[in-house]
Image (cartoon, rainbow, N blue to C red; front, side):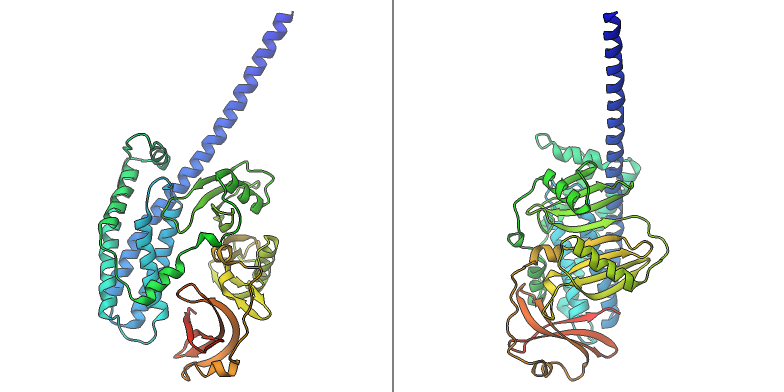
Length: 441
């Protein structure tokens, strides 16, 4: 009798263990499939964006009108930023890719400077045209390599999970088409001579660099990054949260985190390796028809930041893309706008839920003890330094960062010239023009 009971218990235990193992296997396979799909989407989007990028660079070379060049270069700026984002979603953490990322940064900085900061209706200068031509040639070569790699991925049904495994096997010589393709691209970019820029674009490159010493907190490992993401999302634990270290080509040491939500959704986050700060959050769910307006969505964006402990009480820009409201938000201290601590919040207009957050500037520049310096010029005195051709519509006081990454206390004059709207920043200390921003309407 005892033997039969023992046998029954053993069999039952085996059945339970088998069922548990099968369920664990299915859940693991499901996560692997989701990760593979994410990598494939990012890779094919990267290839498409690089194709569009070199097309827009070519258009910029072909036009002689400043307005037309501005339109093309504004699109170059957007596409190069998107390409950098796409690369950041790929599992290249164990492979140096910083030269290619630096090239994309240079394209972004140059196009931003020429398209947004330069005034007047003059065509490109010879130096600008030559720099643009070099960028076009190099992006064309990169696009060809990426296109060939994309064809191989499709025709041979290659998997990114295999590439990730090949990269992890540092003790062996890797033999993977995807890994070899990206190494070839990085080698090509590294072999080329550095691009030459004027001092302003060089300043932009400095401004866009991130100083990790500004981040608060201690370093976190992958488990710590997963816990930071879970805390941010309000999850009880890190089950379904996967963190992976990003490569050296990214602007700062970070983890890409994928989190499965209780309501069967999936979101993506970027978490800094120092301090575990959330710098990006994205929910790719399909957004339905609008049921709230932008004013209501803006209120929800401000409430969202407050719930996450992020300082920001003033909406400085509102846009709508498809059915999503996009809000740029900064803190305001004693009526002074603190631009270095800017965040961007994306609100779905169907339910009012937040589907995106960009908080990199906030993470790197937040300062609870920031002092507002005394102004040495009155608003009326500073206004005299603005071109009389600009019709001033609005004036604010603001802390901004100049092109050398220094904080400046300024008067912000919002005005119209030739049917275009500009923000002109005049130092409240010495009256120097610190910056000009052309607003896209």
